[in-house]
Length: 256
Length: 263
Image 1: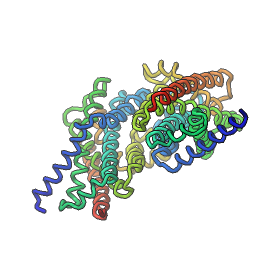
Image 2: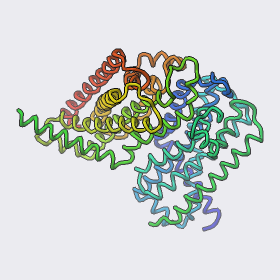
Image 3: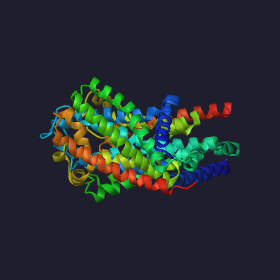
Image 4: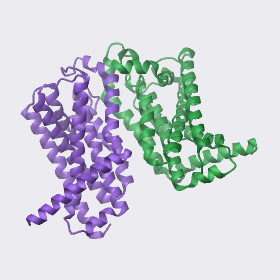
């Protein structure tokens, strides 16, 4: 199959992923609603943590919004996995496997569609956060945050695709969601590293998503610097490489 | 009459057992009950544990002591939702229709599901008490307090299960019940499940003061962080009775409507 045909396959799969939102607008609601509820709820519950000495900002909305954006990426990625599992159950994915399309282009179509789909909950979340008084991160800070969130959606989608190919059932959905939830929340999600306690402080120190989160957060709680940006980009590149390689391995092993 | 009562009790026990087994067999039903609340408990205790140093925070042995009750009630709220999803799946598959055609009380069918939810509620209470003991929670009221916690958590699973069952019977669709999952979190965030009401941001602080779930949480929390007070027990049981009456009333109405219209 020629390179242009492979690209056409990727484009078609991305368009199919986006069409689903246009065809079934209700399907996008949980992906938008869940991170928004968590953002509003956690802000109301833990908002006064900013009174603790050593907290890096006085606005918990600004501190939490990057977490919610990454959560949105996690939910969107998990939804990609669930949709693939549904396609496998229905036999539709077998037809793709039997087509001359290469496995990498099938994977690329699936994970790239997630990176575009996450823009819907991200835009909604940002609108809510700014309305509630979250700091404007500057154009640079906003672009970095969005790039990282789109990248995280690819990571989460690769995770979801791996599990969908492994279990071939929508009942693996909790595993897809829980895996990303753990990865994103065992970071400096609730408080700065110095204020975390016990095991979470150690885990957050070594969890690569902490670097991604801090890079996405920098504009919201202070100024944007290259020193805070590159570790996030590097961590994202590493996670993307590992999880897409895992998903590709599953894709190559898939039979019809 | 006695024979009929015994038959219906056997039906409740059989359907309750089936409901528990079904939950253990399906990860999508089990995960929200034990896995998510346990993960969130661990993460929130590690993430917001320094909150105990805030001047207005109640005197507690540790943040886990405070959070344990919230995790338990969260689990029962989600158990009610999972029970509703399972009942809706039974309706979708036609299993409930076969039960309706059997010579048993229709209410026994719903009670059977609730008996299963109650068993899961008791299990979650024991699970979180065990976690508390392993990680150093000091139960101020000792064994009687722990037993009281199991009782209230089990009762709250039944009460929230009644709401889940009502929505399942009314809609007959698992996706509708599943769609209400985020509502459970709204109710939780607007209560004192995770933080004292004096430290919640407004309007959550004011809403939490009137949210029945806050009274249930306080009733479960009381034996851990202080001695059992009659006021906390009374408010918790009254709140549970209110939720249960509302849920059972809605379930009964939905059941009558389903039997009348046939769907």
